[in-house]
Length: 414
Length: 223
Image 1 (spheres, rainbow over the protein chains, first blue to last red):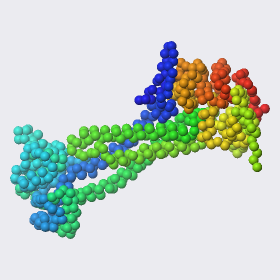
Image 2: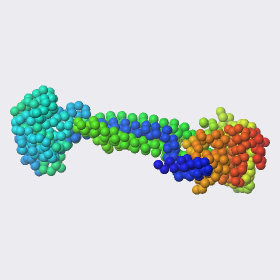
Image 3: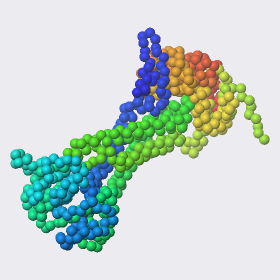
Image 4: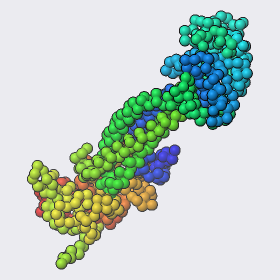
């Protein structure tokens, strides 16, 4: 760093002759002060860094909950679900209705039977659907959900078998069933079973395939579902020809089936419900973060003020020998701005680093979703440096307003 | 009808300048009705006992304080009419200061402490030469806490001289030094002022042995 090359470092005293010092950086520049007073400036930088880290970390972690919901149920973007109400035989009728009146071209409709399982999340268990599909539908569904390849195979018709995707395998720590494995390890390849309260099936449903896709899915055969799961829950799945039409189809279906005996599952509804669910939480969070920012701002403003108060002799001397009030204000402002900027940058960098580590170590092994660069979290941290700088500038300006250098040189104030 | 100001001959002219302050509702004069002319190249000593208003007079003459009444002129221009910032700029450009205490910025070296008082592009060379002439050539890189009291005051002298000021104001510069060091500092100031006027206030007459003229101050008035 160039500061090293100021006069002090350059003035090498030899036994014969003194080397003439030179100033490459003006001695009164903000950088020289901060560098030479690192013992005071570094703690201030650290406090701001911790404040930014705290604020960013809290927001990013809370944001990870709705983000996880979106990631886990992202597959709903690809289809419209429709289920009959009060008439378990009505699924085909609903599907025919959609095919006849759909406002967008359809690629495929399928009739499936479903049961429930659960996945893990950062805030506990979430329900997840196990789709019972026919073999052709199974292949289509996997392709539609961007499966590039399958490890293992598809569940056989009527067999107590299932295929899951990689995120589900990670989340539930499941692997493909291998009869040669010891019993304990084989237990870790059972998706549903008679002894699983939340993931019940009368027979142990083994994982026989893992689909290579980012989407979350659990599929078994429709024949197995029909033979083993009661009461029957039938679901019609409707796939638009163009993915961009899927949303339009969802909105249309909700309107079309309003007041009729049908339950609609569309992606936009999930988005809407998620937003509504977290609106209150985020409103509370806004208040908490605002209060935190306020406390940190005033605390830092006061710290900056105390920090500058310790330098009254310096300011008095400089003003007495001829530096103007605005020159000193600018010097203090520049020093404060550098401290705050460094603190903020460090806070953002450390937050980013820690969130990446948390994502890698804590979240990814469970397929939990966390955005290590969460734009919203960093946006929340932006007003912090601005507020601290404003409060510090105002308090210092207020102090300088009636500052009398004579009081310093006469030692009335020191 | 306007009355023309008398043409001043001095570098500093005090025209019936007074400095008053208010203490518990009472008006107290730190200096009263001071008329004084300081000539270029003159060493003027202002002598007076403690509390006689010496420092206040120095602050008036240097523009650090504005007179409550009367005026102070620098080369014929009123200091009273200048804004705070203009007076600050004038001080940096035309005046040099040595205070009672050897105030230096702790995070700067001796050289840098001198350098900050000059806006000249030759400031580096001049700062070094001054420190060398004042016997500090080997200690230019030292921080104030590595210097003795006498050495610190020499650095202050160098800082006061670096801008080749037209007037140097010294406010009891020997107060924090022993007699020998005090005499040495005054002598250095006097020898190296390069044609600038030197105004020094003190209560110790022996420090004014080299003064061209001495005025006495008592209870805020020249006597």
